[in-house]
Image (cartoon, rainbow, N blue to C red; front, side, top):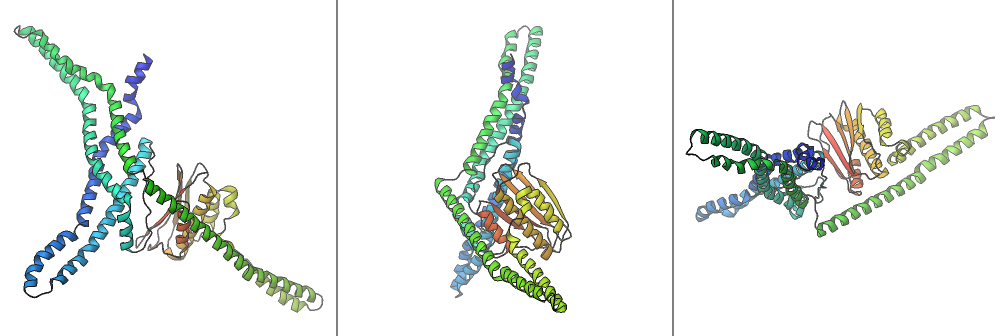
Length: 451
């Protein structure tokens, strides 16, 4: 009896049954909204086509009057083509944002992790190269195909979900009324056979299908998850090979950058701090020789040595700026951020919620990203406060640094953040900057963080 209860009745009250139902019903509105975004975007993308057709219609009579119609066509093309390019880029990124939200929904509500498989996204740069990369990137087209394929599936499964949950109760109520009514009629009107009451029995039997509803709902949910894995989470062999090559190339670039940094530190130590320390030793030696015979000269030499020592300390601080502090290796990112915020010129609030310590590489990149961001805030943002949020979700470390300053920050080549973005890319991570004019500015970092 207990096994029968677990098989037939328990699924009706399980949370995953109602989560699946919520997903199937919500997918109707979500898929319709996403499809509208896609259709509006595609309509804007093809704007140059009707514009050129209109130009061709107008060009005929104009050319007959001796006017160069080619200039009209070229003018309309120049006016509408940028709109099409911007529409394609905007639509692609909008669908990518929708896909990220959907993947987050799958993870948070359904407990299903579908890694989002996207091609490399450019940071900054001009629109045409970005447009070209998005056009040749298959993941852009898979996002669009996903919306078109999912819409009919969402409408069908949504309707079936409503039918599955409402059908058995409605059948039970309607069948019961029909059975009772037919039985009463047969008592007062003998010309009606009592057998007519039993015609409602098949309808009543539909109510017995209620225990099967959870299984039907979960089966329909598997359609949605299958589509999501097919279009959002899978890479072809060619794309996977390109992704592996890209990650390897990024790691080689990161290793080359690290080697260049090591040589710079070695050169600066030899040419700067080492020479200053040698000069300091010579000054102290001269002061030692004059200590008994010329106190005034000794005092002057000691003052010069003191000044030289302070310069050497400043030089060493500049050299070690790109090296991890000992507290990061000993006590982890949380303690290192506390020390970092205490030295910040702008008040910083730290929201750190990482139960399991990530790997050293992820900690190091996150630390320097936060340090560079706080330095930029103090120098350029004119902010009254800043905040740092650190979270770990599964195998990803997510870091966000924000401020209430003037905004306008960019991820330009040659900047400290650009170098950190390259370093993050070397471990298959991403760094993005959102900084509209007037603020606020948010720098976001996402890294794989296997312990």
